[in-house]
Image 1 (cartoon, rainbow, N blue to C red):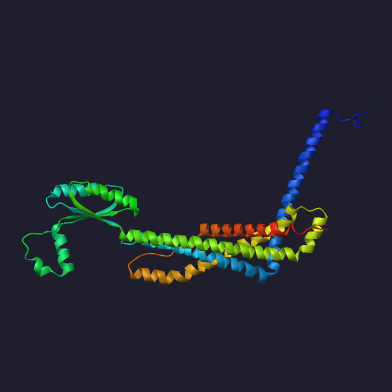
Image 2: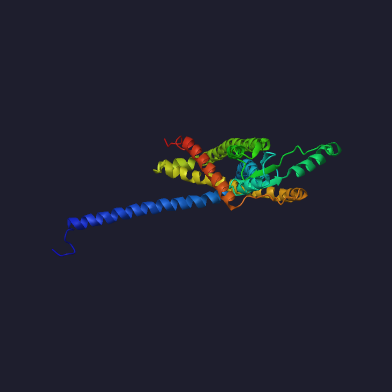
Length: 330
């Protein structure tokens, strides 16, 4: 028997079977990948095939996303603005009247070297009396006093505004033998913290509600797509297509709706920042501040477009999970 017609050895047969299996798996993966690419292209074709309805759906999604995004960006700009405000937390350290000047100078220098302290200002008893005379309007009455009743004061400005850190620093200052009393002005810090927390919770609540609105918009749009292609779905299922194969184009359609809506939302927020940048800068200049509005940058674009695409995909999945399985050939 010739080599050409001789039967395969077991080893050669196993090798041929393995190659065939690998080739079959590779073909299936290539076919699956080609179908995904085709559905991605087809989703864009269908989107631009009906620009009016597709554009309206994407615009509704964009407006729903732009509102919480603008609120979040405004909150970030507000925090940036108050960070450079001169009304930062301040600790007033009233020194003993009998404290020696050398000890006070050394104490102030030690505070300036503290990493938690941004600035230390020394106000002598004479300066304190002069400021009090000017502010109170009692200059003539105070001139008749035999001695200055006001102590020296150290105005300590911390680096941060964390309540716990400020309380800890004030407590350390009270423990010094040179201090008579320590006053921590935290009322504005607490008001600012409450205002910031209120804005943060409002933006989160609004984002949650409008994200639900986006899901409902996408679900309704995909449901209409499914109903319009009902006969096509029945034919495809008759020839043996799986539910995964059938729902794939609708998932990509929802992804495209969300992605376009996210891009439009970013453009709307950018347009709003551009319109407000001039008046805000002019107002800041009147107060001697160099504050400028921060616009939505590249990171904001990626986050907004990615989140919107995920919402679109989720809404499409909810729609096809309910409606695709209900369409069965009889």
